[in-house]
Length: 235
Ligand code: ADP
Ligand code: UDP
Image (tube, rainbow, N blue to C red):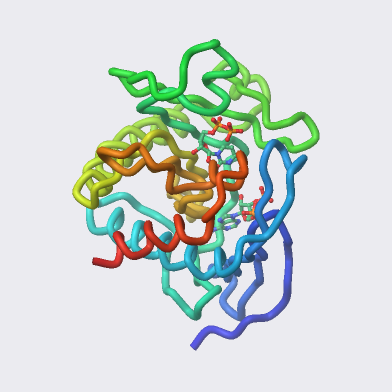
C-alpha cells in the first residue's frame, strides 16, 4: 500500500501529494470551483468525490482502448493514485460544437456544429490568462518538441472519437473538453482529470447542460448535474 508523504502543490481544484514511491503522486479532488481565470470562485458540494469517480471511469475506459494515461488506482472518495509526470505546459482543447471562449473569440452562436473537430492549445499561464497559442509559439517557448506535439494531437483526436462515442451511448453529447499531458519515463501520457469541470456535456434531445457551465453562468442544480453524469458513467 502506497503511503502519502507530503503536500507538494495546491491548485484550484486539486491538491497533489508525494508518496513513498517516487514515480507516484496522489491527486486529492476538492469541492472548490473557479471560472473565468479564477475571477469567479465557489464550492460545489461533493464535486471532488464525483469528479474523482467520473475521472476514474474515463481513465479506465481510455486505458482499455490503448490510450496511455496516468491513472493507477482510485484510493478513496477524493484521492486518486497517479503516475507522477512532468506536465507539458499547454492545455489542449478540442471542440465538436461552438461554446464558451470560441463563441467569444469568433462571434459565433453557441451550439454551432463543427464538422471537423477544432484542436486548440492554451499556454498554461494563469498570470497571462491561459492565452490561445499555436505550434509556432510552443516551439518558440520550448514547451514541447514537434514530435511530442504530434503525439499529443494524435492522442487528443483519438480520445475525442472514443469519448464522443462513450458519452453518446450514455445519452450525452460531448461538446468540448480540455486535456493535459505529461512526460513519464520518456513517453507522453494523458494526465490531470476528465470530468464535468473539464468537459462540456449536453443531454441529447433536451440540450440540458450537465457540466461546469451551470456554475459559470449560475444555472443552478450544479451538484445534481455532476451526479447525473456520474450515474450515467456508472451504468
Ligand atoms: P490548477 O493548477 O490549474 O489550479 P488543479 O487544481 O487541477 O489545477 O491542480 C492539479 C495540478 O496537477 C495541475 O497543475 C496539473 O497540471 C497537475 N497534474 C495533473 N496530473 C499530474 C500528474 N500525474 N503528475 C504531476 N502533476 C499533475
Ligand atoms: N477548460 C478547462 N480548463 C480551463 C479552460 C477550459 O477545463 O482552464 C475546458 C472547459 O470546461 C471546456 C473547454 O475546456 O469544456 C473549452 O473551454 P473554453 O475555452 O470555452 O473556456 P471557457 O469559456 O470555459 O472559459
